[in-house]
Structure formats: C-alpha cells, structure tokens
Length: 221
Image (cartoon, rainbow, N blue to C red; front, side, top):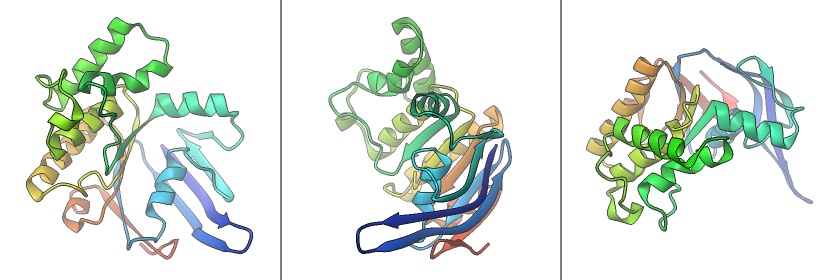
C-alpha cells in the first residue's frame, strides 16, 4: 500500500543543509498496522509527511497503492491524497468555531457530495467513534480524548484506505490513550484500514503488527 524507495530528505537554507532522512526504504502492506518510534528530531514526522504526500523527498520514490506520486500535478495530488489518506494529529487541529459535525465534514467539502450526504457520513463516522450524541457540541466543550475521537472521525469520514497518525495518544492520559488505541485497532481489524502511527509509547507500539525505529534520520530496525 505504501512503498518508499531509497528516500532522502534534505532541508536547505542559504547557510545550512540538514539531512532529515537518509536512504529509507520501507514497504507497508495493505491492512498492516505499523508503528514508528525514535527520539525527538530523528525524522519520524518528516517520514509521515512524505507518506502522506504533504511533502516530497529530495531523492527517491514514494508510491501509494502502486502509483508513483512525484510527477502528479498539484490538483491531482490533492485529490489523490484526499481520497486515499486520512490524517490524525497529536494536537487535534480542530476548528473551535465549528461544531463537531462541521469539523468532521471538512474533508468531504473537496468532493462532489451533497450537504445531506456530508451530514450523513459525518454522523456515521462520529457514531463509529462513540460521539453520536456530541455532534452539536463545539471542540472546547469536549475532553482531550473526545477531541481526539473527533479527529479520528474526520480522518475516516472519507473512508480512506490509509490512516497516518502522528502521536495520536501523546496528549492523553493512559486511560484515554488506551481508548484511542482501541479505536485504531478496531479500524484496522474490522475495516482493513492500513495504519502508520508515530509514537513515543512503547506499550502502544507493541500492540501493532510491526515496529520501525529511526535514529538520526536512518532506519535502525
């Protein structure tokens, strides 16, 4: 489902060149739940951004569902990303001025769907994460765990084949973290969603199918 071949990512300024990722080759199978661990600054989030087509490598190839992505025009790339990939972030990235239902609908605004279809699918996604009774609340009225569940609903509302999660339990206590992890495991087991999760929590990583470790931009395991 995700194939990275000899990936290198270099960030350049007028005076400094920083090698963020060095010669990464990684295949993620369809339906796999992969976790990525490593110390801060080792390139985990950079790697996730490349998988999510939010950034492009300096060298190497990124294939999603066997399709090469580097040469796609921006509009095609945005459509491909919107249809294939859902994103979950540590800090939720919800819009506080919008109700929960409206937050979840956002990815569908870029698709050819009616307002009724958007509302139905967003409601279905919220019910799936146990928040069917919170659709008219605002994010500020929710706990951290509930906000992360809204973020998961937003990630799955477009029924993506891939979910990329960057520290999805990082801001939560252990009980809420377990709750979010159980939702991700259920999405993987029942829906067959391919999930790649960046985490600092070894206990969470042990519950996934496979663990990849990064150190100083290189894959060490």
